[in-house]
Length: 467
Image 1 (spheres, rainbow, N blue to C red):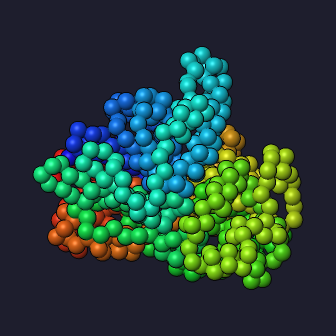
Image 2: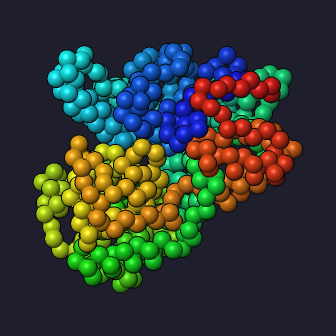
Image 3: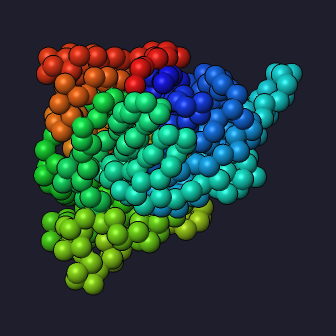
Protein backbone atom coordinates (compact mmCIF):
# COMPACT_ATOMS: atom_id res chain seq x y z
CA UNK A 1 0.00 0.00 0.00
CA UNK A 2 1.22 3.47 -0.87
CA UNK A 3 0.01 6.82 0.46
CA UNK A 4 0.99 10.09 -1.28
CA UNK A 5 0.31 13.49 0.28
CA UNK A 6 -0.46 15.89 -2.55
CA UNK A 7 -2.31 18.74 -0.86
CA UNK A 8 -2.89 20.21 2.61
CA UNK A 9 0.59 18.88 3.41
CA UNK A 10 2.41 21.38 5.62
CA UNK A 11 -0.35 23.87 4.86
CA UNK A 12 -4.06 24.11 5.68
CA UNK A 13 -5.76 24.15 2.27
CA UNK A 14 -6.09 22.03 -0.85
CA UNK A 15 -6.68 18.62 0.78
CA UNK A 16 -5.65 15.82 -1.57
CA UNK A 17 -4.21 12.40 -0.71
CA UNK A 18 -3.69 9.42 -3.00
CA UNK A 19 -4.06 5.87 -1.70
CA UNK A 20 -2.81 3.08 -3.96
CA UNK A 21 -3.80 -0.43 -2.91
CA UNK A 22 -4.79 -3.66 -4.67
CA UNK A 23 -4.08 -2.05 -8.06
CA UNK A 24 -6.66 0.68 -7.33
CA UNK A 25 -6.02 4.41 -7.05
CA UNK A 26 -8.25 6.08 -4.48
CA UNK A 27 -8.20 9.85 -4.18
CA UNK A 28 -9.12 11.08 -0.71
CA UNK A 29 -10.41 14.66 -1.10
CA UNK A 30 -9.91 16.97 -4.05
CA UNK A 31 -9.81 20.45 -2.57
CA UNK A 32 -8.86 23.87 -3.85
CA UNK A 33 -5.61 25.39 -2.67
CA UNK A 34 -6.27 28.90 -1.36
CA UNK A 35 -3.47 31.44 -1.36
CA UNK A 36 -1.77 33.99 -3.61
CA UNK A 37 -3.68 34.00 -6.88
CA UNK A 38 -0.86 33.04 -9.24
CA UNK A 39 0.38 30.21 -7.03
CA UNK A 40 -3.16 29.01 -6.35
CA UNK A 41 -4.02 28.90 -10.06
CA UNK A 42 -0.89 26.91 -10.85
CA UNK A 43 -1.45 24.38 -8.06
CA UNK A 44 -5.14 23.97 -8.75
CA UNK A 45 -4.92 23.69 -12.53
CA UNK A 46 -2.50 20.76 -12.60
CA UNK A 47 -2.56 17.40 -10.82
CA UNK A 48 0.56 15.32 -10.05
CA UNK A 49 -1.15 12.31 -11.65
CA UNK A 50 -3.31 11.46 -14.64
CA UNK A 51 -6.89 12.27 -13.70
CA UNK A 52 -8.17 9.40 -15.85
CA UNK A 53 -6.03 6.95 -13.84
CA UNK A 54 -7.95 7.61 -10.62
CA UNK A 55 -10.49 4.87 -9.96
CA UNK A 56 -12.62 6.47 -7.26
CA UNK A 57 -12.81 9.57 -5.03
CA UNK A 58 -14.10 9.91 -1.48
CA UNK A 59 -14.79 13.32 0.10
CA UNK A 60 -15.34 14.15 3.77
CA UNK A 61 -17.31 17.40 3.51
CA UNK A 62 -18.37 20.31 1.33
CA UNK A 63 -15.84 23.00 2.19
CA UNK A 64 -13.99 24.15 -0.92
CA UNK A 65 -10.55 23.18 0.38
CA UNK A 66 -11.78 19.58 0.48
CA UNK A 67 -14.05 19.25 -2.56
CA UNK A 68 -13.64 22.43 -4.63
CA UNK A 69 -11.38 21.02 -7.35
CA UNK A 70 -13.55 18.01 -8.21
CA UNK A 71 -14.92 19.58 -11.42
CA UNK A 72 -11.36 20.17 -12.65
CA UNK A 73 -10.54 16.53 -11.96
CA UNK A 74 -13.58 15.50 -14.00
CA UNK A 75 -12.70 18.02 -16.71
CA UNK A 76 -9.27 16.39 -17.02
CA UNK A 77 -10.63 12.88 -17.43
CA UNK A 78 -11.77 11.37 -14.14
CA UNK A 79 -14.91 9.32 -14.83
CA UNK A 80 -15.41 7.31 -11.63
CA UNK A 81 -17.71 7.65 -8.62
CA UNK A 82 -17.33 10.32 -5.94
CA UNK A 83 -18.57 9.13 -2.53
CA UNK A 84 -19.83 11.50 0.18
CA UNK A 85 -22.60 11.71 2.77
CA UNK A 86 -26.06 12.78 1.63
CA UNK A 87 -25.87 16.31 3.15
CA UNK A 88 -22.42 16.76 1.59
CA UNK A 89 -23.79 15.82 -1.84
CA UNK A 90 -26.60 18.36 -1.44
CA UNK A 91 -24.17 21.07 -0.32
CA UNK A 92 -21.78 20.26 -3.19
CA UNK A 93 -24.59 20.91 -5.65
CA UNK A 94 -24.67 24.56 -4.60
CA UNK A 95 -21.05 25.05 -3.54
CA UNK A 96 -19.52 23.78 -6.77
CA UNK A 97 -21.91 25.78 -8.96
CA UNK A 98 -21.06 28.91 -7.00
CA UNK A 99 -17.36 28.15 -7.33
CA UNK A 100 -17.65 27.68 -11.11
CA UNK A 101 -19.46 30.99 -11.42
CA UNK A 102 -16.65 32.72 -9.50
CA UNK A 103 -13.97 30.89 -11.52
CA UNK A 104 -15.48 32.14 -14.76
CA UNK A 105 -15.96 35.71 -13.48
CA UNK A 106 -12.46 35.92 -11.98
CA UNK A 107 -10.88 34.61 -15.18
CA UNK A 108 -12.86 37.12 -17.22
CA UNK A 109 -11.51 39.96 -15.07
CA UNK A 110 -7.92 38.64 -15.17
CA UNK A 111 -8.04 38.21 -18.94
CA UNK A 112 -8.99 41.86 -19.40
CA UNK A 113 -5.76 42.78 -17.63
CA UNK A 114 -3.74 40.17 -19.55
CA UNK A 115 -5.15 41.52 -22.82
CA UNK A 116 -3.79 44.98 -21.99
CA UNK A 117 -0.44 43.38 -21.18
CA UNK A 118 -0.53 41.50 -24.52
CA UNK A 119 -0.51 38.17 -22.67
CA UNK A 120 -2.48 35.08 -23.79
CA UNK A 121 -5.81 34.52 -22.02
CA UNK A 122 -6.24 32.02 -19.21
CA UNK A 123 -9.04 29.47 -18.96
CA UNK A 124 -11.10 29.06 -15.79
CA UNK A 125 -10.25 26.00 -13.72
CA UNK A 126 -13.68 24.71 -14.61
CA UNK A 127 -17.09 25.82 -15.82
CA UNK A 128 -20.71 25.25 -14.88
CA UNK A 129 -20.83 22.52 -17.52
CA UNK A 130 -17.97 20.71 -15.76
CA UNK A 131 -19.87 20.98 -12.49
CA UNK A 132 -23.00 19.45 -14.00
CA UNK A 133 -20.96 16.45 -15.14
CA UNK A 134 -19.35 16.17 -11.71
CA UNK A 135 -22.70 16.16 -9.93
CA UNK A 136 -23.76 13.13 -11.97
CA UNK A 137 -20.79 11.23 -10.51
CA UNK A 138 -21.62 11.96 -6.86
CA UNK A 139 -22.87 8.99 -4.82
CA UNK A 140 -24.46 9.66 -1.42
CA UNK A 141 -23.89 7.32 1.49
CA UNK A 142 -25.45 7.24 4.97
CA UNK A 143 -23.32 7.54 8.10
CA UNK A 144 -22.18 4.19 9.54
CA UNK A 145 -23.09 2.34 6.33
CA UNK A 146 -20.32 0.09 5.02
CA UNK A 147 -19.83 0.12 1.25
CA UNK A 148 -17.25 -1.16 -1.23
CA UNK A 149 -14.93 1.64 -2.26
CA UNK A 150 -12.51 -0.44 -4.36
CA UNK A 151 -11.28 -4.03 -4.62
CA UNK A 152 -10.47 -5.20 -1.10
CA UNK A 153 -11.41 -1.82 0.40
CA UNK A 154 -14.62 -1.30 2.38
CA UNK A 155 -15.39 2.14 3.78
CA UNK A 156 -17.85 3.93 6.02
CA UNK A 157 -18.36 7.48 7.25
CA UNK A 158 -18.40 8.41 10.92
CA UNK A 159 -20.00 11.65 12.12
CA UNK A 160 -17.34 14.36 11.81
CA UNK A 161 -18.95 17.12 13.87
CA UNK A 162 -17.33 19.85 11.75
CA UNK A 163 -20.15 21.03 9.48
CA UNK A 164 -23.41 19.55 8.25
CA UNK A 165 -22.61 16.25 6.53
CA UNK A 166 -18.95 16.17 7.50
CA UNK A 167 -17.48 12.77 8.19
CA UNK A 168 -14.32 10.93 8.99
CA UNK A 169 -13.57 7.84 6.91
CA UNK A 170 -12.79 4.35 8.13
CA UNK A 171 -11.35 1.98 5.53
CA UNK A 172 -11.05 -1.77 6.04
CA UNK A 173 -8.28 -2.83 3.67
CA UNK A 174 -7.53 -6.46 2.75
CA UNK A 175 -4.89 -7.54 0.24
CA UNK A 176 -5.85 -11.22 0.37
CA UNK A 177 -3.37 -12.21 3.06
CA UNK A 178 -3.40 -9.35 5.56
CA UNK A 179 -5.75 -6.57 6.58
CA UNK A 180 -5.67 -3.20 8.33
CA UNK A 181 -7.90 -0.33 9.43
CA UNK A 182 -7.03 3.08 8.00
CA UNK A 183 -8.71 6.20 9.35
CA UNK A 184 -8.86 9.54 7.59
CA UNK A 185 -10.12 12.18 10.01
CA UNK A 186 -11.03 14.94 7.55
CA UNK A 187 -11.74 18.08 9.58
CA UNK A 188 -12.45 17.10 13.17
CA UNK A 189 -15.20 19.04 14.88
CA UNK A 190 -15.62 20.01 18.54
CA UNK A 191 -17.97 18.72 21.20
CA UNK A 192 -21.00 20.76 22.28
CA UNK A 193 -21.12 22.92 19.16
CA UNK A 194 -24.59 24.10 18.03
CA UNK A 195 -26.84 22.45 15.45
CA UNK A 196 -25.04 19.19 14.56
CA UNK A 197 -23.94 16.07 16.43
CA UNK A 198 -20.58 15.74 18.15
CA UNK A 199 -17.74 13.83 16.44
CA UNK A 200 -17.83 10.04 16.55
CA UNK A 201 -14.31 8.89 17.48
CA UNK A 202 -12.63 6.02 15.58
CA UNK A 203 -11.60 2.81 17.28
CA UNK A 204 -8.78 0.30 16.91
CA UNK A 205 -7.05 1.90 13.91
CA UNK A 206 -3.76 0.67 12.48
CA UNK A 207 -3.12 3.91 10.57
CA UNK A 208 -4.50 7.43 10.84
CA UNK A 209 -4.29 10.53 8.65
CA UNK A 210 -5.27 13.37 10.97
CA UNK A 211 -5.63 17.13 10.72
CA UNK A 212 -3.49 19.36 12.96
CA UNK A 213 -4.86 22.84 12.20
CA UNK A 214 -4.86 23.75 15.89
CA UNK A 215 -2.33 21.22 17.14
CA UNK A 216 -0.73 23.72 19.51
CA UNK A 217 -3.67 25.92 20.46
CA UNK A 218 -6.47 25.71 22.97
CA UNK A 219 -9.73 27.38 22.00
CA UNK A 220 -11.70 29.43 24.46
CA UNK A 221 -14.59 27.62 26.16
CA UNK A 222 -17.49 26.87 23.84
CA UNK A 223 -19.81 28.26 26.50
CA UNK A 224 -18.30 31.77 26.05
CA UNK A 225 -19.54 32.20 22.47
CA UNK A 226 -23.00 33.44 23.31
CA UNK A 227 -21.80 36.03 25.81
CA UNK A 228 -19.08 37.28 23.44
CA UNK A 229 -21.58 37.76 20.62
CA UNK A 230 -24.15 39.39 22.87
CA UNK A 231 -21.52 41.80 24.18
CA UNK A 232 -20.46 42.86 20.67
CA UNK A 233 -24.06 43.37 19.49
CA UNK A 234 -24.83 45.49 22.52
CA UNK A 235 -21.69 47.57 22.03
CA UNK A 236 -22.51 48.18 18.36
CA UNK A 237 -26.05 49.19 19.25
CA UNK A 238 -24.97 51.53 22.04
CA UNK A 239 -22.33 53.26 19.89
CA UNK A 240 -24.60 53.59 16.87
CA UNK A 241 -22.26 51.39 14.84
CA UNK A 242 -22.31 48.15 12.91
CA UNK A 243 -21.14 44.65 13.66
CA UNK A 244 -19.73 43.03 10.49
CA UNK A 245 -18.93 39.32 10.60
CA UNK A 246 -17.07 37.61 7.74
CA UNK A 247 -18.27 34.01 7.91
CA UNK A 248 -18.07 30.86 5.86
CA UNK A 249 -21.34 30.33 4.02
CA UNK A 250 -21.60 26.71 5.16
CA UNK A 251 -21.46 25.93 8.85
CA UNK A 252 -20.34 29.14 10.48
CA UNK A 253 -23.19 31.28 9.14
CA UNK A 254 -25.84 28.82 10.32
CA UNK A 255 -24.17 28.56 13.72
CA UNK A 256 -24.23 32.35 14.08
CA UNK A 257 -27.91 32.52 13.09
CA UNK A 258 -28.71 29.81 15.65
CA UNK A 259 -26.97 31.75 18.44
CA UNK A 260 -28.47 35.11 17.46
CA UNK A 261 -31.92 33.48 17.43
CA UNK A 262 -31.32 32.05 20.92
CA UNK A 263 -29.99 35.38 22.24
CA UNK A 264 -32.99 37.22 20.77
CA UNK A 265 -35.47 34.80 22.34
CA UNK A 266 -33.73 35.28 25.71
CA UNK A 267 -33.76 39.12 25.39
CA UNK A 268 -29.97 39.24 25.65
CA UNK A 269 -29.48 41.40 22.55
CA UNK A 270 -31.27 44.59 21.49
CA UNK A 271 -33.97 44.66 18.85
CA UNK A 272 -31.73 45.55 15.88
CA UNK A 273 -31.73 44.08 12.35
CA UNK A 274 -29.51 41.12 11.53
CA UNK A 275 -28.76 40.52 7.85
CA UNK A 276 -27.34 37.48 6.10
CA UNK A 277 -25.85 38.90 2.91
CA UNK A 278 -24.68 35.87 0.97
CA UNK A 279 -26.66 34.03 -1.73
CA UNK A 280 -24.55 30.95 -1.09
CA UNK A 281 -25.26 31.04 2.64
CA UNK A 282 -28.98 31.37 1.91
CA UNK A 283 -28.90 28.28 -0.32
CA UNK A 284 -26.79 26.37 2.21
CA UNK A 285 -29.26 27.20 4.98
CA UNK A 286 -31.99 25.56 2.90
CA UNK A 287 -29.87 22.38 2.85
CA UNK A 288 -29.62 22.55 6.64
CA UNK A 289 -33.42 22.80 6.84
CA UNK A 290 -33.71 19.68 4.64
CA UNK A 291 -31.43 17.56 6.84
CA UNK A 292 -33.01 17.78 10.27
CA UNK A 293 -31.77 14.25 10.97
CA UNK A 294 -28.35 15.84 11.50
CA UNK A 295 -29.58 18.23 14.22
CA UNK A 296 -28.39 17.51 17.74
CA UNK A 297 -30.53 17.08 20.84
CA UNK A 298 -30.11 20.70 21.95
CA UNK A 299 -31.32 22.10 18.61
CA UNK A 300 -34.42 19.94 18.80
CA UNK A 301 -35.06 20.87 22.43
CA UNK A 302 -34.61 24.65 22.00
CA UNK A 303 -36.29 25.14 18.64
CA UNK A 304 -37.84 22.16 16.83
CA UNK A 305 -39.80 20.81 19.79
CA UNK A 306 -41.24 24.32 20.34
CA UNK A 307 -42.37 24.67 16.72
CA UNK A 308 -39.60 27.11 15.76
CA UNK A 309 -37.21 27.02 12.82
CA UNK A 310 -33.63 27.47 14.12
CA UNK A 311 -32.74 29.66 11.14
CA UNK A 312 -35.74 32.02 11.14
CA UNK A 313 -36.80 34.81 13.51
CA UNK A 314 -38.37 38.24 13.24
CA UNK A 315 -35.22 40.41 13.21
CA UNK A 316 -33.37 38.21 10.70
CA UNK A 317 -33.34 39.07 6.99
CA UNK A 318 -31.76 37.10 4.16
CA UNK A 319 -30.87 39.41 1.26
CA UNK A 320 -32.11 38.03 -2.03
CA UNK A 321 -30.58 40.30 -4.68
CA UNK A 322 -27.76 42.73 -5.41
CA UNK A 323 -29.98 45.77 -4.82
CA UNK A 324 -30.67 44.69 -1.23
CA UNK A 325 -26.97 44.07 -0.67
CA UNK A 326 -26.02 47.50 -1.97
CA UNK A 327 -28.72 49.11 0.19
CA UNK A 328 -26.95 47.76 3.29
CA UNK A 329 -23.91 49.88 2.44
CA UNK A 330 -26.01 53.02 2.91
CA UNK A 331 -27.63 52.12 6.21
CA UNK A 332 -26.49 54.27 9.14
CA UNK A 333 -28.52 52.79 12.03
CA UNK A 334 -27.05 49.97 14.15
CA UNK A 335 -27.26 46.50 12.63
CA UNK A 336 -25.41 43.22 12.16
CA UNK A 337 -24.16 41.88 8.81
CA UNK A 338 -23.05 38.28 8.30
CA UNK A 339 -21.46 37.82 4.89
CA UNK A 340 -19.12 35.45 3.04
CA UNK A 341 -16.34 34.64 2.58
CA UNK A 342 -14.86 33.89 5.98
CA UNK A 343 -11.27 34.53 4.88
CA UNK A 344 -12.32 37.74 3.09
CA UNK A 345 -10.96 36.55 -0.23
CA UNK A 346 -14.07 37.23 -2.31
CA UNK A 347 -17.83 37.61 -2.19
CA UNK A 348 -20.01 40.35 -0.78
CA UNK A 349 -18.01 40.68 2.43
CA UNK A 350 -15.38 42.54 0.41
CA UNK A 351 -17.80 45.42 -0.16
CA UNK A 352 -18.79 45.52 3.51
CA UNK A 353 -15.16 45.60 4.61
CA UNK A 354 -14.34 48.31 2.10
CA UNK A 355 -17.31 50.29 3.44
CA UNK A 356 -16.56 49.83 7.15
CA UNK A 357 -12.85 49.30 7.80
CA UNK A 358 -12.18 53.02 8.13
CA UNK A 359 -15.21 53.57 10.40
CA UNK A 360 -14.14 53.79 14.05
CA UNK A 361 -17.70 52.93 15.15
CA UNK A 362 -17.70 49.63 13.27
CA UNK A 363 -16.74 46.31 14.80
CA UNK A 364 -15.32 43.62 12.50
CA UNK A 365 -15.48 40.20 14.17
CA UNK A 366 -13.59 37.27 12.68
CA UNK A 367 -15.03 33.94 13.78
CA UNK A 368 -13.04 31.46 11.71
CA UNK A 369 -9.60 30.38 10.58
CA UNK A 370 -7.66 32.86 8.45
CA UNK A 371 -4.98 31.24 6.28
CA UNK A 372 -1.71 32.97 5.50
CA UNK A 373 -1.78 35.57 2.71
CA UNK A 374 -5.56 36.11 3.01
CA UNK A 375 -7.10 39.53 3.66
CA UNK A 376 -8.65 38.23 6.88
CA UNK A 377 -5.21 37.18 8.15
CA UNK A 378 -3.73 40.59 7.35
CA UNK A 379 -6.46 42.37 9.30
CA UNK A 380 -6.38 39.94 12.24
CA UNK A 381 -2.59 40.27 12.44
CA UNK A 382 -2.95 44.02 12.93
CA UNK A 383 -2.35 45.56 9.51
CA UNK A 384 -2.97 49.33 9.58
CA UNK A 385 -3.64 49.47 5.85
CA UNK A 386 -4.98 46.83 3.45
CA UNK A 387 -5.86 46.72 -0.23
CA UNK A 388 -9.37 45.83 -1.38
CA UNK A 389 -10.12 45.79 -5.11
CA UNK A 390 -6.73 47.42 -5.67
CA UNK A 391 -7.48 50.39 -3.41
CA UNK A 392 -5.79 51.06 -0.08
CA UNK A 393 -7.96 51.31 3.03
CA UNK A 394 -6.96 52.36 6.54
CA UNK A 395 -8.05 50.04 9.34
CA UNK A 396 -9.81 52.20 11.93
CA UNK A 397 -12.61 49.80 12.88
CA UNK A 398 -12.32 47.72 16.02
CA UNK A 399 -11.10 44.24 15.12
CA UNK A 400 -12.15 41.22 17.17
CA UNK A 401 -11.14 37.58 16.80
CA UNK A 402 -13.40 35.02 18.48
CA UNK A 403 -11.61 31.67 18.49
CA UNK A 404 -14.43 30.15 20.54
CA UNK A 405 -16.28 29.78 17.23
CA UNK A 406 -13.72 27.55 15.57
CA UNK A 407 -15.30 24.39 14.17
CA UNK A 408 -11.91 22.66 14.24
CA UNK A 409 -10.69 20.50 17.09
CA UNK A 410 -8.03 22.14 19.27
CA UNK A 411 -5.01 20.47 20.84
CA UNK A 412 -7.05 18.81 23.60
CA UNK A 413 -9.59 17.48 21.10
CA UNK A 414 -6.90 16.16 18.75
CA UNK A 415 -5.09 14.28 21.51
CA UNK A 416 -8.44 12.92 22.67
CA UNK A 417 -9.29 11.81 19.10
CA UNK A 418 -6.94 8.81 19.37
CA UNK A 419 -8.03 7.66 22.84
CA UNK A 420 -9.70 4.51 21.47
CA UNK A 421 -6.63 3.65 19.36
CA UNK A 422 -3.88 2.34 21.67
CA UNK A 423 -0.23 2.89 20.62
CA UNK A 424 0.37 -0.84 20.30
CA UNK A 425 -2.33 -0.97 17.62
CA UNK A 426 -2.03 2.45 15.95
CA UNK A 427 1.42 2.26 14.37
CA UNK A 428 1.29 5.11 11.82
CA UNK A 429 -0.02 8.66 12.24
CA UNK A 430 0.30 11.24 9.46
CA UNK A 431 -0.41 14.88 10.34
CA UNK A 432 -1.90 17.03 7.57
CA UNK A 433 -3.94 20.19 7.17
CA UNK A 434 -1.81 22.33 9.47
CA UNK A 435 1.08 24.76 9.53
CA UNK A 436 4.41 23.83 11.11
CA UNK A 437 3.99 25.78 14.35
CA UNK A 438 0.85 23.73 15.06
CA UNK A 439 1.99 20.37 13.69
CA UNK A 440 5.37 19.87 15.37
CA UNK A 441 4.15 20.34 18.98
CA UNK A 442 1.27 17.93 18.30
CA UNK A 443 3.67 15.45 16.74
CA UNK A 444 5.87 15.60 19.85
CA UNK A 445 2.87 15.20 22.15
CA UNK A 446 1.63 12.11 20.29
CA UNK A 447 5.10 10.57 20.41
CA UNK A 448 5.29 11.24 24.13
CA UNK A 449 2.06 9.24 24.50
CA UNK A 450 3.79 6.23 22.98
CA UNK A 451 2.73 6.40 19.32
CA UNK A 452 5.82 5.10 17.49
CA UNK A 453 5.51 6.65 14.03
CA UNK A 454 4.17 10.20 13.76
CA UNK A 455 5.03 12.06 10.54
CA UNK A 456 4.35 15.56 9.23
CA UNK A 457 4.71 14.84 5.48
CA UNK A 458 5.77 17.39 2.91
CA UNK A 459 3.71 17.96 -0.21
CA UNK A 460 4.54 15.25 -2.75
CA UNK A 461 5.94 12.79 -0.22
CA UNK A 462 4.89 9.14 -0.48
CA UNK A 463 5.07 6.28 1.99
CA UNK A 464 5.02 2.56 1.22
CA UNK A 465 3.40 0.64 4.05
CA UNK A 466 3.23 -3.11 4.52
CA UNK A 467 -0.17 -4.28 5.66
